[in-house]
Length: 252
Ligand code: NI
Image (cartoon, rainbow, N blue to C red):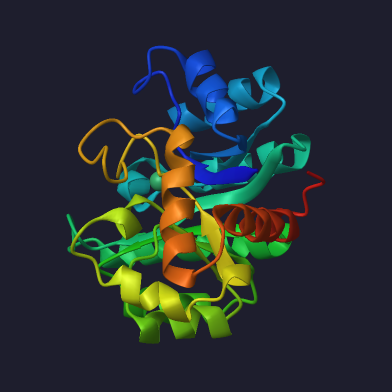
């Protein structure tokens, strides 16, 4: 059994969500955790967790949303979190300096406010960080939180820092790409600190690179980890599922 710890399975990207959920199950991906990181996606996510027993949701505002979010919206996250048992974390939240660098202060402010919220709720966090490693580490060090560094693809040194801080590293399709240093880095990341994710519809693994990603492809990531670490895909599934259970306090 596997978990997809991070996917965006919304109508905007998929014609038939029933099919996405069914195909995931057919490939032993029994649990899906959706990342709702805009107002629209949070509302859609809340419908999906009502409809599907095996689907859970995390909520939070992506750095791209920085100009659309008010303090009231953050209070609304708190209300949604408290009222819905299947809303299990705050995220994805974080810093993204890849596209826009001139709004760092605003991004940092939104990130801090949402981390404060997670602290208050004692909720796990899902962290988005792109071209912003040092700032992300500096900010996270101010809090005593648990969570996942989503789509981790950094160096061994960066991995070590996050691991020491108690974070899990979310590993997805990038690991299967031909020219990635992540294959080397993953050797030093213990299985009990890895969570599996697709980030669907983005970052489809080899041999589907460039296509629309789907949670059903999680086994391709698990198989790549298994090969590198010399264990079976089943063991990767077992250990990483346990990590999800521990982090989100789920009874799977
Ligand atoms: Ni994402």
